[in-house]
Length: 392
Image (cartoon, rainbow, N blue to C red; front, side, top):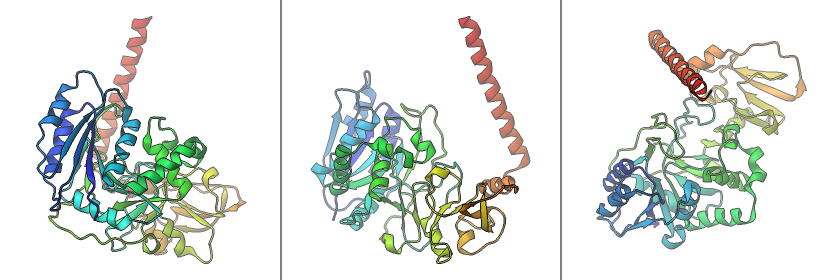
């Protein structure tokens, strides 16, 4: 059985670190020694963070505090922490603005054991997405009866690697230029800075056709607090945690799962329901792919394109792909033949799409939100003009 070391990655958020350590302490652990490493990136006047790490009492094994003598930045810090998998055999990496479920370690052990020798898996996520990070709308999964799903996108909000999984990525990085794969990235990811380790790991996954294994119910949640790469705190990535005291997770293999999603969060199993009539098909139900990234003859999308519409579907069932699987006809999702161009004279139902993802909101609340957003923008513009006047 894998007994991964827990690696806590922190920099200058002492309160966040304390909260994470409190949640780790409440978790369930096997009757064997579990190593804890608290890795602190360098910052002058960071005594409070160091003190919290030094004072923390770890009752489940050995604890080591690593204080870096130079500022690594998040990308290099994560890479060096991932390298600890060589020493420990496997690692669970947690950034300081996370909070974990009491079952996070049990899940990590079981998932790592399950993933052993599975070449298509590049890592384990503790986090489960409920927000589509490209389309910025609610995201839900096809429920196929198992505790896991697969996503061709790495996790940074609680993740685990075996040494084999991590070293495969490291070997690829040593012999490849990630920039050669940037044209395959979702548009918002391509704009991420060169300081993102997640961006280069995704390039690796796309090139090697690998997936992360994700849980159906999250074992970690994200406070998304202000820090080096986040300008303001937000609760948009908060998700429910699995709070059971014991669970044997039921994992499914890639070749048996109906919950397999590409890097754009599109369910690749959707095409199975349109075969054999449309064998060369690509889903884009959330409309986040550019046409240059579509390589298939048939495109299933909620966006408007100048191609022949072969079939169309509604947008009522959840998740969106259920409308295809259960043949819910309508005028919200279109099956295009991209080899036949036509004049686009139809209009997409934007209101229906907004209401589908919004679900429900009181009119007075919508007015309040709109008013406050307008005031914030007005304040921002006023301050900007005032600063320019002062400079003048």
